Length: 225
Image 1 (cartoon, rainbow, N blue to C red):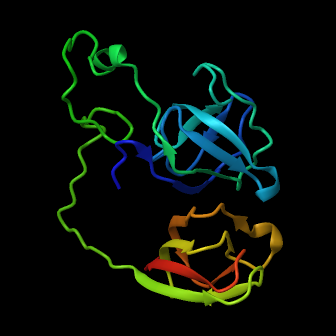
Image 2 (cartoon, rainbow, N blue to C red):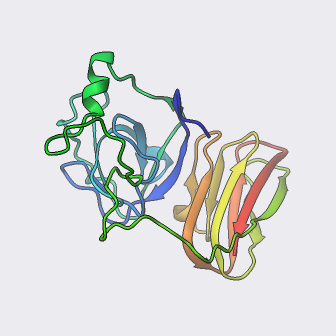
């Protein structure tokens, strides 16, 4: 998806450790999270709060703070514990003033040139310690696609996944999705309308449990094994 004028929604990412008083958040990957982007943090649907990304420090660390404030102003996010989620809705990209555009793309001394150097998704130069990714044995995989009809709203349903699932993406066509890997109420993540659920880097065998806020909905599942 092009991001010329708007950032695409970012699926929920799970906090690996508790948030800090200085706004520091650690997740498995900060991919698709950008400075000045509006993000939502929640332990459960009842305590969701909106913040702004103030810095993306590395592939796993970012800093958040109050919306529409200087980048140096951070927020205390100690209330968001390991296992909480952070995600972002679709939103318009902030504008860069024309008089700052050239300066933003100009490299400092000793380069002293407009940047045309390849960098990775986090803005780091490719070096011996950060090599350009090359896969000489590409093995493309095709996800398993399932469309599951949900007849009644707020009614728990489940689906038995194949063995050793590596990645799952799930979204509803008309309702808000609640989803978990167990039937325990406190395990469920409830997502806003049109926000997809995505988790990868797993090796899971079992069922997923879900429900919709709307009658006659359809759960669209993509499963990688």
